[in-house]
Figure (tube, one colour):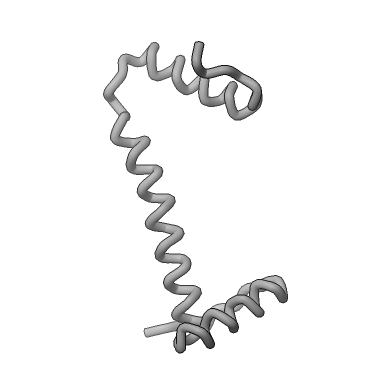
Length: 82
């Protein structure tokens, strides 16, 4: 059973949502539900790929990798071909 939900969207997003619903001959609710499901699937796939590596490395190697990741997020000019 579906429940009513309230959230705020930009006018451009609402316009795009209405356009999609019209072009696809479906409801705005269906568009939003599909978008959320696809977004969650994408995010979980990325998370699962990372978790597949858990336990693959010794603690020191894993910590070094995490440090490299943290540094690379801060310093976008780093050369990873070292």
